[in-house]
Structure formats: structure tokens, C-alpha cells
Amino acid sequence: MDNRARRPAILITGANGEMGHGLIHALSQRNADVVAVDLHPLDESLQPLVRAHQAGDILDTQLMQRLVSKYEVTTIFHLAALLSTRSEFSPEIAHRVNVTGTLELLRLAHQQSTWSGVRTKFIFPSSIAAYGVAGKKDRLHPLKEHEYTEPTTMYGCNKVYCEHLGRYFAQYYQQLAAQPIKGGVDFRGIRFPGLISADTVPSGGTSDYGPEMIHAAAQGTPYACFVRPDTTIPFMAMPDGVKALLDLYSAPEEALTQRVYNINAFSCSAQDFYDEVQKHFPQAQVSFDPHLKRQAIVDSWPAEVNDGPARRDWGFSPTYTLASAFRDYLVPQISARYAP
Ligand SMILES: NC(=O)c1ccc[n+]([C@@H]2O[C@H](COP(=O)([O-])OP(=O)(O)OC[C@H]3O[C@@H](n4cnc5c(N)ncnc54)[C@H](O)[C@@H]3O)[C@@H](O)[C@H]2O)c1
Image 1 (cartoon, helix red, strand yellow):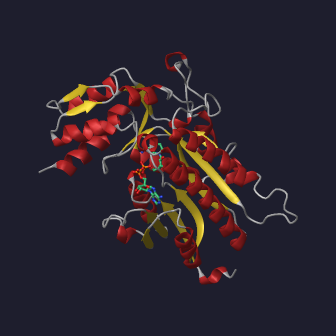
Image 2 (cartoon, protein in one colour; image 1 turned 180 degrees about the vertical axis):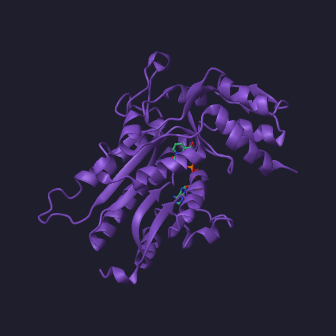
Image 3 (spheres, helix red, strand yellow; image 1 turned 30 degrees about the horizontal axis):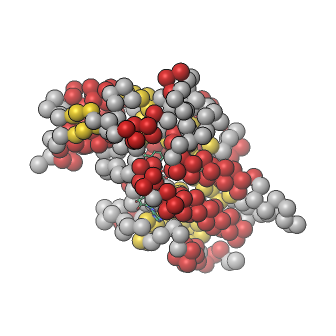
């Protein structure tokens, strides 16, 4: 395959989602050539920031092959997924999108590398949903990556399995082939905590109560939180999440001692979250009305994770604490967004 006919580009799937918004802005500041794919047409505000955008399904192999006939894909940020709550309503569809979709993209990454002879980077956002702590939440130390990985949701199962698939493609795919493979897939995954974005309102996740609370308070609308006040999980402000994706992407492969990394910024309870909301929006009308099944899902996730390897191997270091995320990022931007 003659690569000179194709323009090098970074492919982002699920580009129109919460994380995609932040990532496209950050990559455009680096003058990266981005090709964006999402089921829904890319937001008009993002369109000038990318080289090309395509509305379509990642499971549509013809569409994906048409894209790689035009672009030499050097890196894939594979963000497209059905999130945790939505996946429980349609587990088979979630499996198709989250697992088959990832498998197809790993194959596409491998194909790209065999054309160019260079390893294709594959950046995969996994989640704390990969854990299942089965009633032990209050008694656990901050969890390492390999501990308690028996999730209770389809989304969590999908994430753990795709981490394994990524590791397999990076190290073992076609291991019995007669000729050594040139290139291959350089898979790198991050297990994200719940993310809070000032730009977008989340949909379909089970950590959404945090961001939903602050977006509702800024709009002056009442909010019923679907978990108990003492419910604690790790969270992170979206700019730190995007920075982590780019830091892991930029790290030299030899510095990485594992393929999947935990990261954490601050663990806080729903009550802590409410206290911050109250501090900045004293008129906020928040009640707690736990949804037993969504509560059970959040209770299966750890209160804290150990992100020592990410800090050691690629210098992960979040900027925001809970207080500074509210003061310096969320409140100013969300207030401006909903200003009359
Ligand atoms: N937001 C969080 O708190 C969080 C936490 C941990 C991990 N993650 C992971 O990060 C990634 C991005 O999450 P997000 O918050 O931006 O989610 P999101 O729901 O905002 O965005 C996902 C995007 O994927 C698109 N999509 C879904 N199915 C598709 C398909 N078949 N083909 C093409 N596009 C499709 C959707 O249209 C959507 O725009 C996901 O893989 C998610 O699992 C998110």
C-alpha cells in the first residue's frame, strides 16, 4: 500500500460526546489533523477544528474502510461507547458497540500498521466500572488495576474485556504467523473515574449525579440525586481527563510498564458534592431520592483507586481538587453557559 496517497490523521470515534468535545479542542491547539466519527453529526462549534467529520456507526465497516482509504490513521482515540446505565437497558446492543466495535477498531489499527510499518497508537478510555467490589466497598484500600475486576454491569464487563483485547492485540495478535508482524497496535488504556464537564451535560452514565447536580443548580432547577448522600466514588474534572489522555498518548512506549492505568483526582461523597454546590449556588434545590438499582451499581465501584503506576510511568498529576474544580473551572464556566 502506497501511503503517500493518504494524509496522516488521528481518528476520534464518539467525537461528539463529552470527552470528544474536550479532546478535539485540545488536539486543535496542537494543530493535529483529526478525523471525527460519531453516530450524530459533529457539533457545529467543533467542525472548524477537525480535518474531516463523518456521521455514522463504528460498526459500519464500509464507512470505516472508506475513511482509511483517504487517511493514514496513526492514532485512534476510541471514545465511542454506550455508557453504564444505558447499557443495562440494552445489554446486547451495548456488547455490539462496546466490544465488537472495539474489536473492529483494533483490527483497523492493526491493518493501518501493516500498511505503514509503524505501530498504530490505540488510546482507550476504560472506567472504574471495570471493578466489582461486592459489598466490601467500605473496607477496601485504594484498589490496584488487577484487584476486584468482577464487574456487575454489562458496561463494566465490556470495559474489562476490551482492556484484555487491547493487551492481546498489542502483544500476541497473529503470534503464530510465519512472518514476524511489522508494526502492530500500541494499546494504552486509562480507567477513568466519573468525569465532570462544564461544557456538556452527561447522559447515560451512573456517575452522572455529580455533574447533573451542578448543571441543575446553575440553571435554578430542582434536582433529585439518585444515590445516598454517603455514596463515595472517585471523580475528575474533564480538563484533567483530557490532559491524561494526551499525556498517555505522548509517553514513550518503553516508559510504560503496563497497558492499562488507573487515574484518580479526588474521591468524594454525594454529600461533599452537594456541600460544594450549596457554597456556590445557595439557592440550589437538591434532594436525595436513591434509585435502588442505580445505587447498587455505584456501590459496586470502589471509593478510591491506586494510581501510583500512572504517576510513576507517565507523570500523571491532576490539576484540580474538588474545591478548585468548583471554584476555578465548573462554577465560572457553567454559570456563563446558563447566564440569561
Ligand atoms: N463520562 C465519564 O464519566 C466516563 C468515565 C469513564 C469512562 N468513560 C469513557 O469515555 C468514553 C467517552 O465517554 P463520554 O463521556 O464522552 O460519553 P458520551 O456518551 O458523551 O459520548 C459517547 C459518544 O459515542 C457516540 N457513539 C455511541 N455509539 C456509537 C457508534 N456505534 N458509532 C459511533 N459513535 C457512537 C455517541 O453518539 C456519543 O457522542 C467512553 O468510552 C466512556 O465509556 C467516560
